[in-house]
Length: 185
Image (cartoon, rainbow, N blue to C red; front, side, top):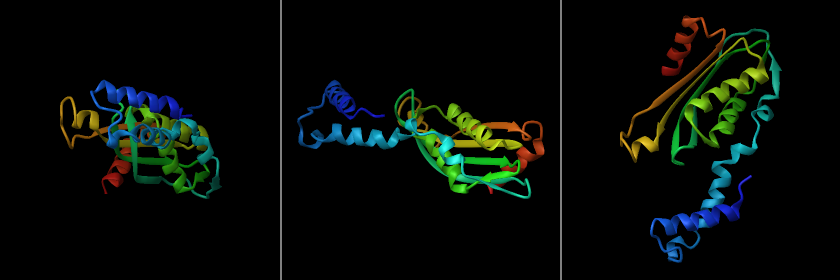
């Protein structure tokens, strides 16, 4: 849970630390705005993906399910700068599926934390495995990291791609290729 008072105090100190006048008109309400923003941006810390993945439906076939282009925004835990992009989730059911919006909500649970992309990709796959028990899971995340684009190396437009492959996808290159081809459209 975000402690608004601590965040406000920290923002005031931060502003003073960079040489700003915290009593300047434009900054007077910035600490409280940032505290409210933190409740939204870091709200996934208080959520459990199981909440979203528990509502399941029986299916007669176990054909591939792919939800692609799930937009997300997250915060790099190293610089507290945003990274954002698209997540793609593929799974092969084992007699049960989950509502498609629940896949997007699962991405949100893990994106709304101070995070690294590699860990987020694994957390999404872990949550699907734990709750759906599918035959296989493949998660692909593509993101632009502002810690690389606006500071440091300054390479806007560069993307980082992470993948996690589990179960039936691990040894089946044809299935992996099929998912990647579907993602690329």
